[in-house]
Image (cartoon, rainbow over all chains, first blue to last red; front, side, top):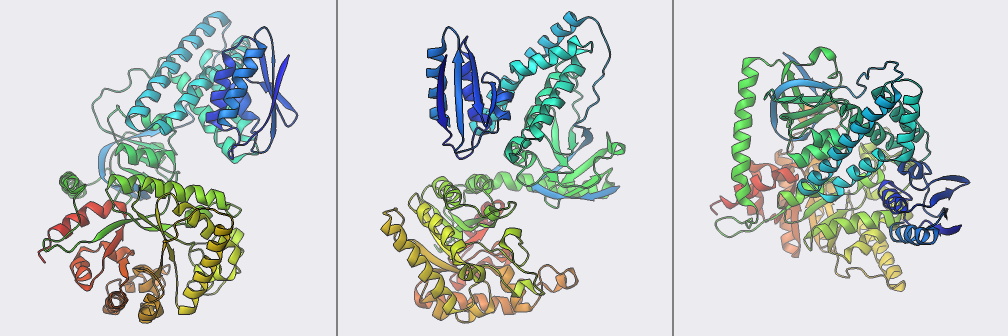
Amino acid sequence: MESFEYILQDKEGIHARPAGIVVKAAKEFKSDITMENKGKTVNCKGIFAVMSLAAKCGEKIVITANGTDEKEAIKAVSAAIKENL
Amino acid sequence: MITKNGKGVFGGIAFGNIKIFNGDKKVKKYFTTDTAGEKKRFEAARKKAYDKTIKLMEKTASEIGKKEAAIFEIHSMMMNDDDFVALVESKIDGGINAEAAVYEAGEETAEMFSYLSDEYMRQRAADVKDVAERIVEAFGQDDNESGSGEKTIIVAYDLTPSQTVGLRDKNISGFVTEGGSATSHTAILARTMNIPAVIGVKGILDEAYDGRFAAVDSSSGTIYIEPNATTINRLKDKKDKAETEMQLLQRYKGVKTETKGGKSVMLYANISNMTDLDMVLANDAEGIGLFRTEFIFMGRNTFPSEDEQFEIYKKAVEKMGGKRVIIRTVDIGADKKVDYFNIPHEENPALGYRAIRICLDRVNIFKVQLRAILRASHYGKAALMFPMICTLEELRKAKNILNEVKLELDFESVPYDRNIEVGIMVETPSAALISESLAKECDFFSIGTNDLTQYTLAVDRQNNMVNSKFDTDHESILRLIHFTAQSAKKEGIWVGICGELGADKRLTEKFIKWGIEELSVSPVYILSLRKHITEMEF
């Protein structure tokens, strides 16, 4: 299991566009990937799920990947997050 | 003939048969045990809707813009969302048909969004419904619906983005909505797509109007249902004229605004929100003569932060690429109310606590805005303008605060345009009458004729009882304008007009002769005013 923590920098929080980019990145991998925010954990491959967190600027999110390609998955997803959020 | 009124958001006239778009289209629901068959149908419809959305995205990106297209990429991802697909399939497993399953899954997901605390996310509920609706449509019924060749006026409560763009090829002549705002999707897209649109028309969604012939005049914001022959002819004439004129006016893009005798005028535009910026560029304005900043403060519950304001001003000056952008500090009060300013009730607000009076009193609000504007001035050519100045003391106070802010920025080594021009609105009789002294202490004047008329003629702009007395070209007003122009000339500063009167062609020649160097008007008037000026003989 691999994980990655991040404090959201983007003023708008996880809006539709960045959510789309993160989900797209997560979907490339076989591992189960989740996103946690404010005690709620959702599937990081679902756009509705990620958007429904309504995570805001300054809040912490935790990405966890579990599976055969978990290392690569965390690398790609964290890169997408750092770049867009 | 039935006449209804709303607000025109994009000029022009359209004729066509009304087609009422009801968001809550009834989806047939029935029970079936063929779950495998229904899942296949769902898969096929989903694929079809997905492909269509991707096409829509590409089309929007190339015809309108990448930013506008982003929404469709999100929609396409929503259609592919595992949770959503699983929800639909579980409903089919429950024994209902695929269309109903999609509809219900869409409603449930939208409901989840509508409970979120974040306003932006709540609004995404509309996107979810939009997505579900498009899959439902893809089940086949709606495929060969167009093709009658007849022009259609689309009537809806408010159109979703995919509806507005997807409808483009279907012989649409106009949009009418009961809801919506000037910044809604309907308004923005109608403007970009060049389709006349009227919003906020109460009672237009009556099914009885469906299929009836109608005319839309968005310049007046009027809808005529089954218009009589006289009305049709009048509107056709107006339409022909407007179209010919618009085409002819395109030639004036990039042309210098100058009379035949070589007197040039700076032809600027007034804007009230960021979407107006596109109109400013499309109509080739030479600058922004009045950037009303009230929109940043209105329609919210807390003060906009310095950074928030900075981003907006920065975007405006950058988009104008070095052309002058005159930013007027906030003019709240009188008819523009904002709750969180906590202004006590006033018997006579137009003569009360408003604009610069608030700013000089609540210096913190003012400083935040000045800082934001100064910071933005580093990225283009910004100018500052104070509204409602009546006395020299007010101008001096405002400038002192500005200097304090500049010092703060210097101290923090934040870059800004050190030569930023500082001007005032001349919109009170007092300012006009002491314009000689004011001109010694500022860089330019912009005459706001609407308030100047209200205060000179003692006619309340908001009071219908005295509306007929609101005479913007009364001799008293013209004399004040003339005097202000003379004062400016004497002190060597430039002077412009940013009120409605600036677009009044009967007066343009007089203004130029008086030494008015800048006219700032609604973006739509730019080209016709430029034509008018270039045809002047003197």
